[in-house]
Image (cartoon, rainbow, N blue to C red; front, top):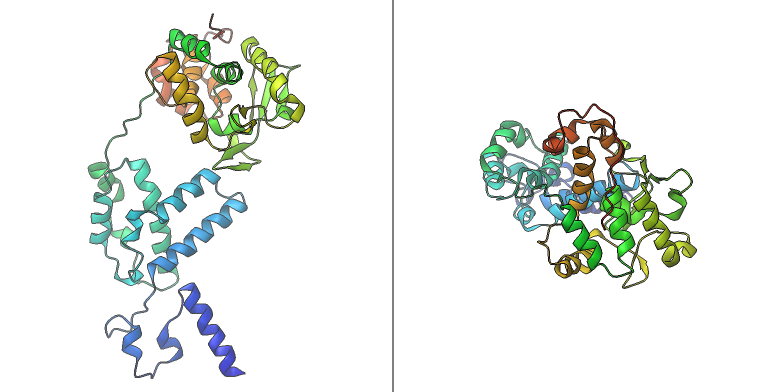
Amino acid sequence: QQAGGLRMEIQRKIQTGEFVFRDFFPNSAKLALFESGSSGKKVVNLGKLMDAQQTTYERQELNNKLSASTVAGYVKALKSEKMKIWRDRDVGDVTPSEIRAWISAFNTTAKTAKNFIIPMRSILKDALNDDRITFDPFERIDLPKLLSQTARDSEYRIDPFSKEERGKLIQACRPDERPLVEFWFQTGLRPSELHALRWSRIDLLDKRIMIDMVQVEKKEQARTKTAAGTRWVNLNPEAVAALEAQKAMTLLANEHVWHNPRQGKAWATADQMRKTLWVPLCARAEIEYRNPYQVRHTFASGLLTSGENPWFVAEQLGHADVTMVFTTYGKFIPKDYQKPKVQPNLKVV
């Protein structure tokens, strides 16, 4: 019975990557086969630690500690080619110089690089806390300096659609596409918020909608990207008219407002909408392609150039404070923005 219990414990530790041969067989003649060198250092496979880290992220998503989009980014990074070079390594063999060389070879923006760095850093920090390593290699790296020297600048630029371009896009819409496009230009929702919007969240009497759900990576969450993301968004007459036009198509289902017209059901992902609706629409409208998120930028810049208060704009966009409005859209803010003005009418004739 004791031997059977010991065997089960050993098998469990092997599966979790926690097995240390010396702890169970300190006098074995085969001890050297299970240890790195003769120092008695514990050998722990990084690949198993990566799999365990993925499980931790997925559990945090279920507990609403991390958003679905954040977890999807980390999981994608853990399964990537950039991480593959570490999978067969012993966690105790990772050196600061190797980490520096690994990061330097990314050839990505700093934002993308962090999707790889954060999981790796968490793994090594946990390994240190569990006495699997004697120091954290990241503690010996000046990460901000390294990223500033090696990461490339983002090519993404805020490029709002002009009034003429908005008109061309809307005119090029099919009848079953037009309400969605018109509504989006008038509300500036994030794609995840647009896809999760349900008829039960719409208050046509007070002309506003409640944003308290998102849909990311085919998963719907009863929470927004940030606490500030849960908000009421005002509806101008054009947004109301777009909803009225959409009623005939989806109201009876009493669920999602916006459907993929080619399938007759809710959009699955933002990429699905980009490929099947947005890319063909830009081609039909004969305008230069910009990604769909520029619709949100168009909404924000339109409010600001018309003289709307930046604090109100931040509230409508779902930002925690006005900082991002100034840093992202500062060039659209007129000098006399303090003067209250009516919300702009973006109607396109």
